[in-house]
Amino acid sequence: MPRSPAETALRRDPVMRRVIDAVGPLRDYYRERTDFETVTRIIVGQQLSYTAATTIWRRVRALEPRWRPTAVARLSADDLRARGLSGSKTRFILEAARRVVDGDLDFRRIRRLDDHAAAERLRGITGFGPWSVEMFMIFGLGRDDIFSVGDAGLRRAVCSLYGIPKAAYAARIDSIAVRWRPWRSHACRYLWGWLDVADA
Image 1 (spheres, rainbow, N blue to C red):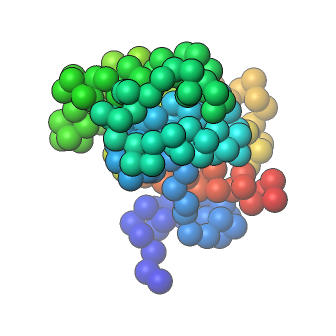
Image 2 (cartoon, rainbow, N blue to C red):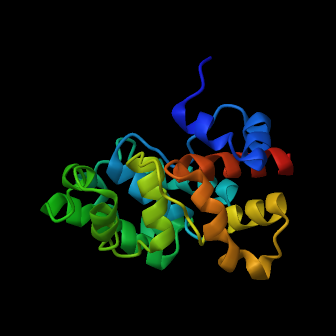
């Protein structure tokens, strides 16, 4: 199979070349059927392991099979909390649903924006901090050049692969990640994949 432009470029970094060979085809962690669904899936996953978040998401998702904003907005907070959501995540999801229904949160409009403007708009979603914005930019919008500096998994992968002490990560990451431009989103996905392989 021909290599993608992203893979071809990332292979110029010898470390990333080893990562790509170990990982194989990329997987999508957070992409759901609609943008609203992806946003709520990301909210569920905040500060949780992927496995724990997936378990809770399945329980929550079962409350409303089609997971449309109009239906989600009518769900009770008690039902959502009973499926394992915290009170704050419950509020975030219900507010996002209401904003979509009201037309205040328009994902079609966000999709037409450049990276900077889209990120600014996404930061206006209650409970959507930098990590959540970056996950949606990478998986929901499919943007190519987003790097999630604060992601704990990426920090662990980069420190291990490049022999960087954890205390030096913040000072060193920019000089490493610049090698992956304009494909840093793809580098993130390979690094997450490498963690799956390394932990297996």
